[in-house]
Image (cartoon, rainbow, N blue to C red; front, side, top):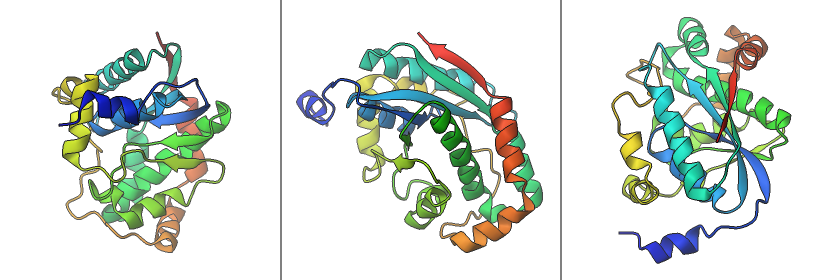
Length: 230
């Protein structure tokens, strides 16, 4: 078990030292990643990519509840949250691109949108709950292939070397675990049985020529809903 003292040493509160866009799914990992860096003084702007109707409608409320819990734990109020309708992006990807690349292409679109939010909100980084090997999009090669499209900010992954049990222990300690296992938690929305785990950057760039990337990003940002967590 992770001792309370150990948690305190890992994430002792500091004054706010910068801003980042935190990608939140409502699952177990991303709220823990957010908590670790918020406790280190990183001021959050949250982004939730909504896959409804390709996932359960309850997923959004689960994501918001994890955000509220993390903000309570870190004593941060007034955090801005963007809700981006991601289902149209997935539909474009699935109709125009090879299914095995859908997961990583989805990730690259999310990063493009998150980067635009970061620029708008004067953020220095994007934060994710990625841990090496947990999902098809989280192999080392796919992580590099996703990050390479960013031009203005870097991606921080505080959980990158943790295993699932370690992450779950943190989630239980900060109180997000019961929320993240509620029925309806977000899924990736990509129905493929054989996702690529070693996508090449040049191949992804070639496949993406079938997509109007600028229009997809513009659509996502124009239709985004923005709220403030109190």
